[in-house]
Image (tube, rainbow, N blue to C red; front, side):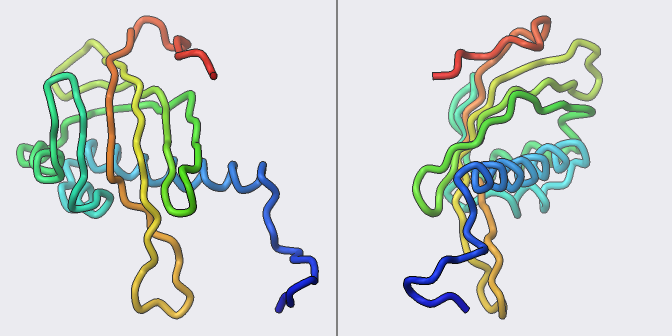
Length: 156
């Protein structure tokens, strides 16, 4: 137990906290992509908050739209996430930005996009030692050139 005025040996450095945040959010985002590959609407729904908002080239989408796309099965056959960056947006929100290269079922040509997702940290109710649970509250996709896998917006 740490008392006020005593050093906390378990405190994270900013670099460690940033790495841990990136690891957690990457795992969360990967679960969404895996749901798209598996055609698993339940897994997709588990990752999204009820008020989820997606902003895409063809307009806005809610949670039911995002999950509903899996009604006919998988929407992605393969994917690769790269150029991942995480940024805390306060205590309980964080932004994950990355490039996704993927292929859709029945398509040979790969597609690419830059994605920014905002995740909200929640606490699991009823747990003896509650672990954080992240829910995706917002995502925006920006089409990218699949022929240029290293293209990325400048770091600001």
